[in-house]
Length: 309
Image (cartoon, rainbow, N blue to C red):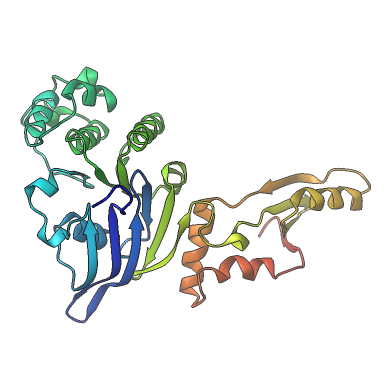
């Protein structure tokens, strides 16, 4: 494996359980030093994909390499190059935080300093506490600490900030950015779309076992899905227009109102969450995910509705 090779390469990945198909031809790469988020609803195939890449589940067909190795054949040396943060570890917590980390650090050839890791995840005050006595959010920080103590080249993060309060989540985002700056590659799954938008270089969206879109955070869903929305009210009626030139549209609306700014006027630029939900809605309606934005753009007339509706 050379420095220019992807750290993860998946081609036509398939997994079936008898007649049930969990993955149906998934293909993507993750580059060195990249944060790649795999998004999708529950049951979409995210966990199956990750378990195959971690070496915990065999694929039915297709190709996969992780750090230059087929994960079905990865040995202990290969596994030592990975960091894995599962949704839940099930650890009973019979040791203190520091004892637990020192124990895990001993499994790796070049681990991070244990006290530095404790500080990085914000558990300095709890370092001497038994893990079983920690709160749910604090235990989750222990999970993250165990995943990074081995100084992994590739870090798998499965719903890492579950149980974090807003401040802790933002501290964690800063930590992940620091890992990326150090060259760590990261595969993230999260149901927090703002988290994916903040951290990801690229995003893949998986549904019904198929990868339905992939690209940069600002590319997913296509340009049409990101056309801004101008909203305003007149009396009890709310108006809505999607336009690529929102400032011009606002000027037109004000001019049409005799120079008076209408009540509640606002410009909304669709977020990753809006685009993602639109893609899933399009699939449910039997349309291509990228048709979602175009269908709304093609509706040239403003949408009006009663404020009570």
